[in-house]
Image 1 (cartoon, one colour):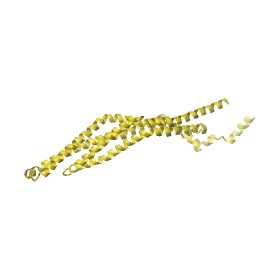
Image 2 (cartoon, rainbow, N blue to C red):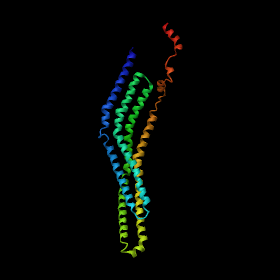
Image 3 (tube, helix red, strand yellow):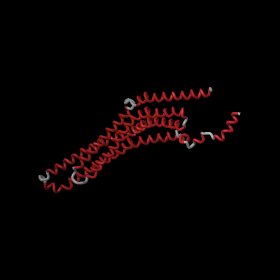
Image 4 (cartoon, rainbow, N blue to C red):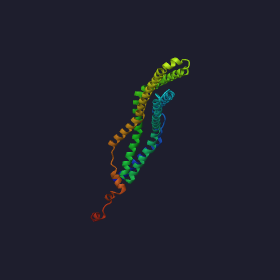
Length: 295
């Protein structure tokens, strides 16, 4: 009787502990991790990235527009390439927005829903004794903690890489702006020459090919330089905002799979009934044993 009472008391102690953890997670921890102060540094970093992406996108759009009215078709392919860069900037902005949403919501999801659900499964296991409930409770609890930790860590790694290239991104904006100013000046010069061609028709006819050709060639070179800088910046932003966070999360998942590789097949067999015949004693074989006990 003492052993039975001990087992019952331990079961109820664990049950009360699980209820306490669930309530603590819902009403205390979830409010702490969803407080804006808790993730203020990460949100500020994401806002800085967003400002940088918008600056690069505006620079690309301005460069494309400036090249649109250049005489001839020399700069048209570059202008089209610059215009198509907006697609990549939209992807990067979407990734930054998604990261900001995850930072603000992952704590709420993990500690208000996932952890309490894991505690509920553990509580059920104490009275139903299905192994699958115990295994799922442990796995879901680990999953909730991992996603809460993995996402901020992935963003921290992303910030470290981003800070390394931040000066390069700022230099890209500055260089592209200077190139745009140069292109606008060249366009104005070509426009002035075009308006004054009647007054200087003799000189103009002799120098028209060389002057316009040289001017357009310089513009094309500056535009190509801008395109190269912007493409390098896009590559850095895609790696820091899209690739690295995903890689870090996958690494976390791989580590958890190695460290906590639980076999739930036994529990599922008991629930589905495929192994139920092992848990029900054979009445024919058990009758002699029962008669011996009665004797």
